[in-house]
Length: 241
Ligand SMILES: *[C@@H]1O[C@H](CO)[C@@H](O)[C@H](O)[C@H]1NC(C)=O
Ligand SMILES: *[C@@H]1O[C@H](CO)[C@@H](O)[C@H](O)[C@H]1NC(C)=O
Ligand SMILES: *[C@@H]1O[C@H](CO)[C@@H](O)[C@H](O)[C@H]1NC(C)=O
Ligand SMILES: *[C@@H]1O[C@H](CO)[C@@H](O)[C@H](O)[C@H]1NC(C)=O
Ligand SMILES: *[C@@H]1O[C@H](CO)[C@@H](O)[C@H](O)[C@H]1NC(C)=O
Ligand SMILES: *[C@@H]1O[C@H](CO)[C@@H](O)[C@H](O)[C@H]1NC(C)=O
Image (cartoon, rainbow, N blue to C red; front, side, top):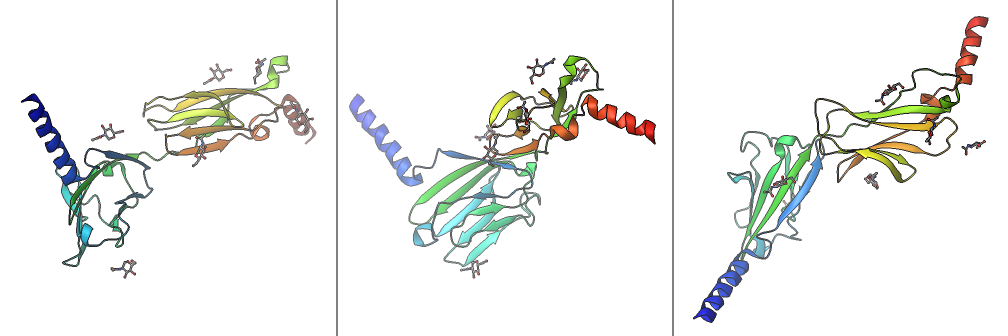
């Protein structure tokens, strides 16, 4: 009896997998930065009988936003669905059925479902996350003034970015990380200090990064850090003129 039950369960599982293909429970995570395009791939090389009809659905209500029906020559995107957020932004590849969302905005975040029907039914889901566009970090000097003491051989710097979340801000010396922070507070800027010697010949850069994309600002010590001699020379010139 027990064995029969197990066989029955196995049979049911198998038929489920048979009907929906093995992609059913897999949600593909896709990350994109606001303003960039993202393509959701069907992984179909060419639309033929096996993939006669394709429907792209969006959101909890699974509204149809694109449709391909080979038999009826239908090849449409419905970009007024659900509320116009996709207007002029949807592109269907007529070979593969892949859907591209151009010029993404955070409101395009959500689950997109592809339903392929023909000789078999296949479902595929994409969890699309659209992240706020990363600004290039800004580096400023925090050395208020030049002093003649020995400690002034160092230049104090601050790297910062405004309005980012889920991002990491780091100082790099060459390719190695010196320090990093990751805070989500959209109301304050994220900033990270660094001390370098005026004579330092290494290359430093400040990088703000999501897991999938980053933006870099290179440090130009000569431009940001003014040595005491430089200041003295300027004062001298000032008195001469
Ligand atoms: C597919 O799209 C290309 C470029 O947009 C177009 O030249 C071609 O005629 C289209 N093919 C079909 C079958 O619609
Ligand atoms: C989609 O991804 C986001 C961010 O990674 C996550 O918070 C959310 O739970 C995911 N949704 C689904 C349905 O997997
Ligand atoms: C900038 O420098 C001043 C004076 O040296 C210091 O008090 C302050 O904490 C520094 N700011 C940051 C953000 O490190
Ligand atoms: C100057 O910076 C270096 C690191 O760049 C640090 O090791 C050193 O202690 C600093 N010196 C002073 C006087 O702050
Ligand atoms: C940096 O380079 C200059 C000239 O290339 C050299 O004179 C100086 O000693 C170097 N400084 C350090 C700290 O390596
Ligand atoms: C930044 O992104 C590029 C590719 O876009 C990658 O090669 C590089 O390693 C990334 N840098 C960091 C610090 O994450």
